[in-house]
Image (tube, rainbow, N blue to C red):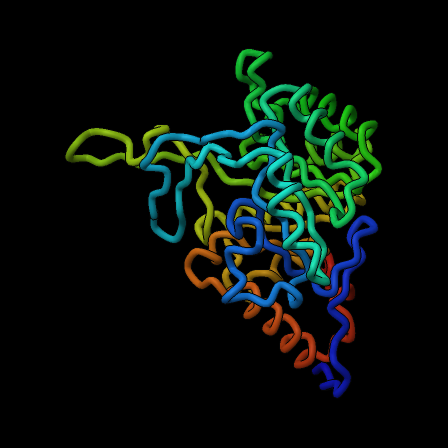
Length: 311
């Protein structure tokens, strides 16, 4: 039985050269640009904030309805609505700079040129600790094929962006693939510094009375506790395939949920859908992880990364 320790456990993480005071971040698209939660969450307590996706030009997103609650989850088809990179830099980033919290910017586009343009604009900007590349977007120049579900497209995109920035580059992988390890290896070969997984699973809900989809876009991304076992499995597989550090996400509601991802191989975690259910969920997860480590006599969170016992 582990002995209790009186010294506070070390929650700090060095993630691909990004200093995190603790392993808990906010998942992109679920926490706005941080300021939206200012009256509920002390951003100084977070390990990091991964902001809502940023594109080169403004995007209005999909028509409503755009969100539908499902059993133990949520479908969303927001359509990556955002004001564009210039507005982000001018109006959103200055607020985040006042906190001792790492800011990671989620970037996306609908062509290779889109991704390059926003990446080049963000490179070297003070206050940005790293870039998370959302590769779950359809490449309109390639007939709508999703970058993140074609391994060669993923490699081409990520290797190109690697040449365009000196910031840590984190590939956000799609779970809508047959072999997640193959895509993890492609990201590593492309020169990425870390992985972020998983993004949402493709889903659909139908109103049986009207015979119409619940979402105007017909399909959407499924998130929440319903996808957590899938996400944990994929993190475990990716961690066994590459040496890159991983941000694990997918239905984390509690500290115990987060620790599943850590044991599977994640160095950090991102809380997403829980922010809609309990806006202060991130703080509860941080406190819960610290309490667990103290109770188990674990001096540092790093001791638990990838330590799942499979035999």
